[in-house]
Length: 296
Image 1 (cartoon, rainbow, N blue to C red):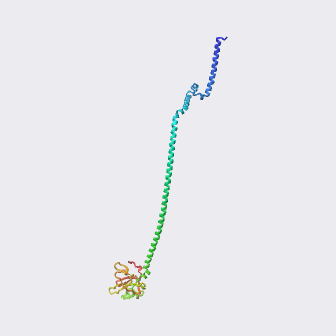
Image 2: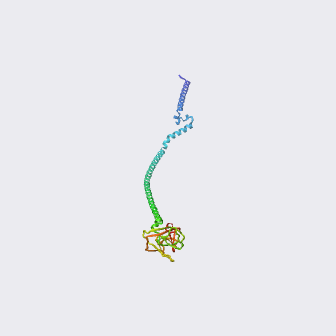
Image 3: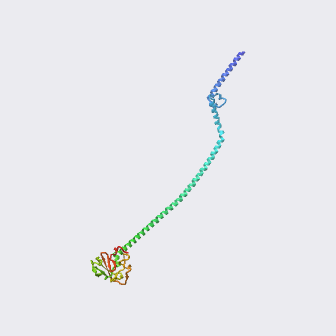
């Protein structure tokens, strides 16, 4: 029969065994917990086993916030999402508006370009027409100027011919053949009888004596003789000195010349050294009237 001491030893041994077993179990459990500490670190029961309570506590708080932050921020997220959708719709509307403006601008540019092209083509055609008209007018002006110069040349040619020997032949710048011409020594000779080299009263020699046919039946103009001088009969186109103006004018334009009905079949004329023929109170130019210096 066990004694009291034996029971005490039994209980002691049993308690020691249980305590040892429990300690072993706790030791193994603690090692397991520490081996899987990330799994247990946020459990308040195991928090005393932490090697760094402050760090693990901070981690757990942050982890709890991260787990619940989605739930806490869900209203704000919903609001932001809706605002984003609204902004996207607004931006889409703005983009459509921009596309519409771009389309309108493109159409306006096409219309303006077409109108400008029409105006440009019109202006080019007008310029071509203006150039053609200018060219035509220039050609017409050239033709007209050429005609004017041709007419001017013809007129000057006719004037030159009229003033030259051909004109002289037509104008019949001559005297009556029996016109008395004062000669040196005080004598007078009929013009038709004067010889080459004879000297006139003025002291100038005769270089040529001409006899011209009156083919056009020209009448004579008469200068009445003064101071006993005989009358002078000369054709109307012969030049005589006008004492008033000091210029040589045609006989028909002289105030003292009188047109007569007298005509001869031929005329006589002279060419002298100084190209003058003094007869009575008048001084006549000789045959070469194209060199008269002061002709009226």
